[in-house]
Image 1 (tube, one colour):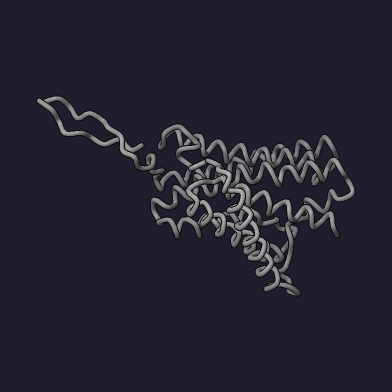
Image 2 (spheres, helix red, strand yellow; image 1 turned 180 degrees about the vertical axis):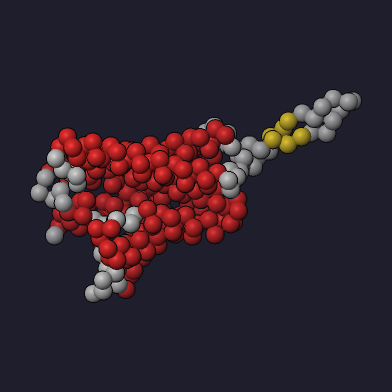
Amino acid sequence: MRAVASPTVAGQPPVPQTTGGPGPTIPARAAWWAVLGLLVGEVLGSILAAIAAAGTGSARGPVATLLGELGLWAGMLGACLLVTRHYGTGSLARDYTVGFRPRDLLSGLGAAIAGLIAAQVVSAAFAGTSLHGTNTQILSGERGNGVGFAVVTLIAAIGAPFFEELFFRGLLRTALAARLGPVGAIWVQAIIFGALHYGGAGYGLANVSVVLAIAAFGVILGYTARLTGRLGAGMVAHCLFNLAAAVTILAT
């Protein structure tokens, strides 16, 4: 809760009181910590993935994927922890509205469906062009490997929803809202979220449709967090969205 000062009494200093409002607002400058966290996570993830590739002989296997994601998530989580300790209450749940209620299951399902529709619309708009691509190679590459497919699916359906929602819809959206307002923050974090899913030079211009599709989903997740006041529904939606990709690959 935000502290306020009560009237002074007989020369005594103001006594802090609490209101029923939200916790301290994360300042806009905290967004730079988020950028730093992404950079550190990308570097650490690349190093860990390279070590795994050297040990297993596969640069795109489940071990390299897992370690690469762990490195990225470490950078994201580190940024969240640093910001909440320096600017917030010290509580991830309070500063980034991490919470879950049973009705978030239904809200999350609705957001997932909306996200899948939005992604399909974007994909269809680029169909048949050099800008059309997919970022599901990490899953399709393990289709014949039961253990590998299970590991990658767990990464996509459990790890990514938690860490990415905490970072993008929690830290980044909150920090950007202090400068851009709630709506501007939703759109900017979604653009950054989409850009992070750029597949790399190996995929060429086909990355364009992927980035835009993921950014569209990021907008939906941002509004979901704002409307529900929690990250729980977005985590459910993110999980279902990624699971849908895994099920589609298994079914084809």
